[in-house]
Amino acid sequence: MELLPLKYALETLTFWHLLIWLVLTAAMMFAAAKESVPKRIVTSANAALLLIVFYFWIAPIVGQLFGDKFSWAQVWPSGFVLGAVFSLAAAVHFFKRSIRASVVIVLIGIPFYGLGMSAAYWAVPRFAGFGLVELPKMPWGVSL
Image 1 (cartoon, rainbow, N blue to C red):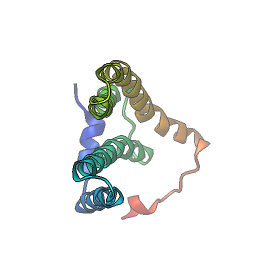
Image 2: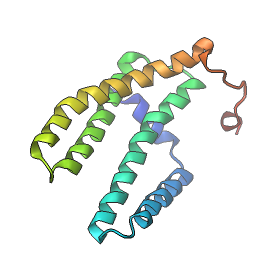
Image 3: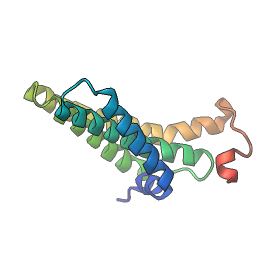
């Protein structure tokens, strides 16, 4: 079982992606300046994790718009990995408030987010290919 969309997203990361990620994470820490230090760290860690999950979800979708498409067998494992990371992060966040809520988030969230992210990996590039979304012939990112 290969995680092809995740490998693709990892291979597209550059220094500029990491710099932007650090700037946005630091901005969240400064936005929570009125909070205590542990709460600021948790806020910036949540923002960093959310940015990572969204990049690893969106980058393969955008990449498929201008290249080969992944099959369902290639995308579902990556979607479930991202769904698990997203659900486990939410469960850890709510763990202090309620252990039951954390368990429910894991039990319902992993299949729900995993299937949803996998479906988006597979369906969004195909819907764009039907002409529902008008894509330019030579986008600036590909021409570079």
